[in-house]
Length: 474
Image (cartoon, rainbow, N blue to C red; front, side):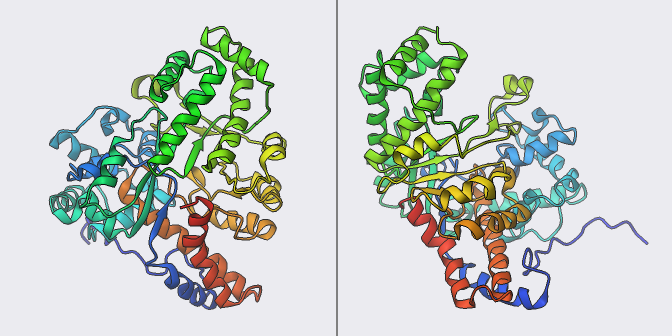
């Protein structure tokens, strides 16, 4: 018997749906109700220049591997050097791109059981028509097939945006960004999509970060405000928020090690601010200032209407040698334990019932879903529980999320799915995974006679359309 060199890449139509036949039948009908619904992406990291320039993707490795830390981190864990994956090296030569692709295919087994495998298979099969499973034997053939498709105008970013049925794509931007790409897209008569920015001020709220005084000075220049004192700093942040709103922004985005929101008095905040500008703030003072500024961000959201999204609890750049060599977002941000009940209490006591204020809280510590976040969302009209993201953006975790949160807070107190990705072609696969999992969860409620099927179908539609539109004010 000869050695098998290729195995068919076949996506089962019932993938991720419940195994029990009678529950699966219900789930099929619920999934069919949302299968082709437009995609709403209220939080992600796709570069808007991708759609503005509309240039062909250069090669399969640059599209699927090099910029995607979900992919590179597991390859690195399996012994592949990030340098060999092209991380931090700029454009790849044709030979280098093929070598990167071969590494992905040779190490394909490391992705078994992961959502990354699900996303990659869906992208390859449903977008590019690949029918063979990646392996050392099939790497070159798949590379050539995808490369040929990428030379077709139907595979340029704008054409794929339309094919993916994207209704809105939100990107995160630095407060000093001039948002020129967003403005150019909005003014382009040939562009019919919707790409809007989100305000990401983390670097300007953390006095302990290297170069913070220079960052605050840049903020002042961008805002046209003197940031030499604390009132000027607050004014600069408010001005840049208004600038983002004028360019379509609907939300802010915050990620810090913890979620504490303890306020400072104005005099104490001003004192620490002066010390931080002089490089004299202690570590404890820097942390206290950042926690205070989260509450200030909530106050500003009450004033200007921007939705506040919070996803704390991550130790960024865990491996310093990798960070020093390749920079941030290279696969070694690691979750840490997080607490919300006491941490958010100061903010929620002030603004938790403020009309129109929306606070969407994400976590990578699922132990807090039922213990803290669901009870908080079940009382405070401002607070919504963010969908599973990052390490929890997986089928089993998404099922646990629904079980942990819905029994206490229902479905309407959750955010709707966010794909949180830089990998443009993975967006439809990520949303499809979420829709299939939710169809299965809802089908089981129907099978258990806890929900009628018409209510389950309406809930499925709400989760992909009504919830993200309402929660993120889109």
